[in-house]
Length: 138
Image (cartoon, rainbow, N blue to C red; front, top):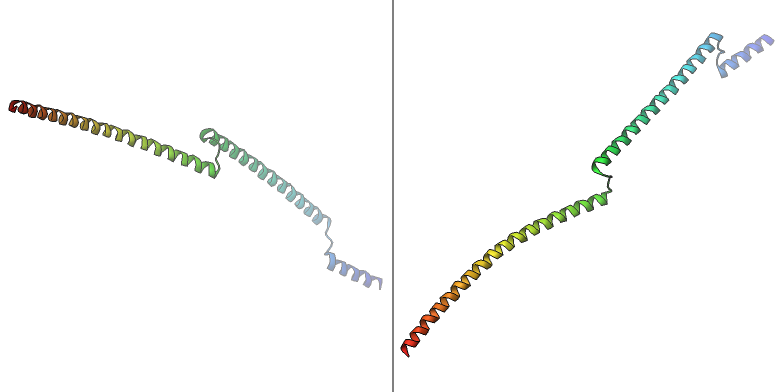
């Protein structure tokens, strides 16, 4: 009976915990676990080193960009600077148009002045002529 009980207990233990492993199987399994652990640690370190290198590259690229283009602006600052540039451009164009208009107005004023002088000269000459005739008649 003791043998039957021992066999039953072994069968139940095998069913619950699985079959016992031998010394070679146990050593092989431990070596495999150790290899897996070591390779996992190496992979994590390589990934970490890659992440650090990527971060260093990103940081260097950001610093180079900032040195060339200045510090990064927010959307509001960017919109304000574009608007200021557009206003400045519009003011320059308006000043150019005003200068052109002033030059044109100056030419028109000179022409009008010349015409008024000619008209005054004509009126003076007509007045002299009329005055001369009036004296002759008197």
